[in-house]
Length: 411
Image 1 (cartoon, rainbow, N blue to C red):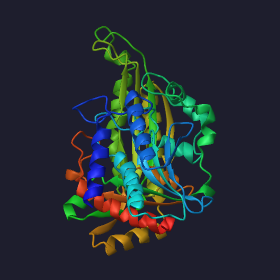
Image 2 (cartoon, rainbow, N blue to C red):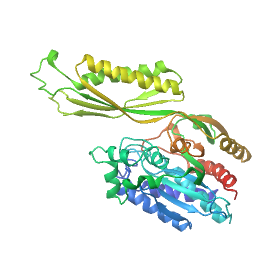
Image 3 (tube, rainbow, N blue to C red):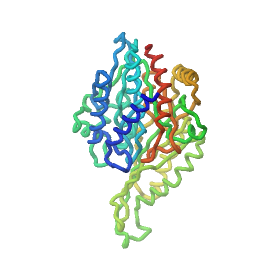
Image 4 (cartoon, rainbow, N blue to C red):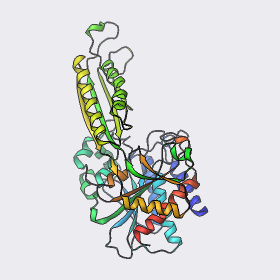
């Protein structure tokens, strides 16, 4: 355990150095200089473990440990290495480091898997760079492709495809990144909980059986700019006032949907953004989540109806696009039971959980059997510079994942 703890700590602390905001949390946007630094480190660590390392067309990193029967499908272990602005050091990287530690244990114990094992480090899960969460895994599973990569743009108006090209990758060959389901036996992910439950009940691991459905909307309102001092109130076409009316009603819509449905307006852009200018354009995001698919769809419809009604009454032009919709995902029951069995055998305190956050696991579930383990988050804090999980707690999660991977890969 101590060896694993030291390895995990070393990897996570080193990856935390690759940030655009030193001393203010992890800021690592996809295809940035910090992305390059992190990927070089991860590739180096994979090579030191004797893995076959490759990058696909959009920049995902694979490290492969060949099985005794190379033609069998691979057990894939990993997570993402991008971050939100001023985020934490554990969200995403903990899952990649889990994979690296599992390979190190296999080497130390001189085990030979029958099935190949691959460690994967995924780009652009958070959606911070291009406004589309779970982008990389969606490309890998064929949900989006080259067309969407040219349409998705960052805050500077530069497409994901162009950012990829600048980093040496090629969106035009995105179809080459698609994994054939017949080549994947399972996808396993370890992640920090990002909530307070495990810490409050003093349990070691959460074994996820369901991930909530997630939808993202982008709402654009166009009014008319004007002088703040000379335009009468009854002659204005104020996009921000209209947006405020809409945003103020969104929480009630989510509450009315029930089943723990939540809706969040997290990004708001106002143009021309002058103190003495009536806002002519507002663009804002709406993130909607629910474990109930009917409630999720109902919330989407009601928010769109609200936008149309409010903009019509205010003589404002409106447009709503939906860049992401993933229904609630039930994870593989056999892998779930395998994880429960190994947690019990190791004497760990565990519980079955629903994930309120989206993870690459839910996308991979479309092509293979999947499993997801949570480890506790101190004070339930995530997407924050103070995000923290004790290294001993990560090791306990890796212990369960190691046993699960051994079972699936038949080491």
